Amino acid sequence: MHVTTKQLAKHCALYSTPDAMRAGSQLITTTLPFLALCAAMYFSIDYSYWLTLALSVPTAGLVMRFFIIQHDCGHGSFFGSRRANDITGRLLSILTITPYAYWRRCHALHHASSSNLDRRGIGDVDTLTIEEYKALRPLRRLGYRIYRNPVFLIIIGGSLHFLLLQRFPLFMRQPAWEMWSSVILLDLTIIVVYGFLVSLLGWAQFSMLFGPVIVISACIGSWLFYVQHQFEDTYWARNNQWDRQTAALLGSSYYALPRVLQWFTGNIGLHHIHHLCSRIPNYRLQECLDAEPVLNTINRLTLAQSLKSARLALWDESRKKLVGFPATF
Image (cartoon, rainbow, N blue to C red):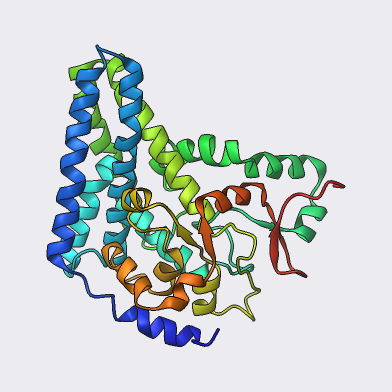
């Protein structure tokens, strides 16, 4: 690499200034299609539920886009004002069913420890080394294999995480009261808001309309989070060799999605840039990438290439690669 990691970090920092006009425009261009699709789903349910299900896919994509905006608010990057970020992030949490302050704290810990083999467990996908896996008892190996199965991890695990696990602050971090209050307040708000919708629509129609949207958006979010760090040539290091900027750049992928999918996912596929400078708002990530050709070549994954990552499960410390389960144990 002719350009050093520090030089790339310096380049990325140039794009960390929020733009209120672009932020407001992104909120509008996400909210209006979301409301229109919700209305279309409601009116389509009596005509054809297959059409309703088809409409739930782009609706879920917009929920994912709302999540990215909430994510930016948590980093303090969407608006220049912290108050505006916090208000927007908390309001969007009703749609994303993700407690804002609790998730913000856990996600900050993820950024602070990502790719550090000695600080695993917060905000990441559980990943064992080959030696750690070998040392497990058979039942624990089976449990890890089930956990790392793509169907369980992305579909079942993703839905359980967003629907159930985020209702309880299981991994407490200081300040504890802020974390608890974030979760409890959102849970109460969900009961009120979604309870009102249930009273209007009935349980059956509410579930038919919002169930698929929630499950699909949870699966999309889980897959994105998985593939952003789980790829063959990713980076992991022990604490004494770990470097934050190196881990940010080499331990995160550049997920080169088709333009329409990049729009729905709020450019979060440019994850190596995001980890290198988390203060860049999502609407400036592409221009940051375009201005430095080197960033376009680091850990680039196409949609087809990323599917191969689903088989990866163990970190090989000797080869510095993420590998699949060995056939012999």
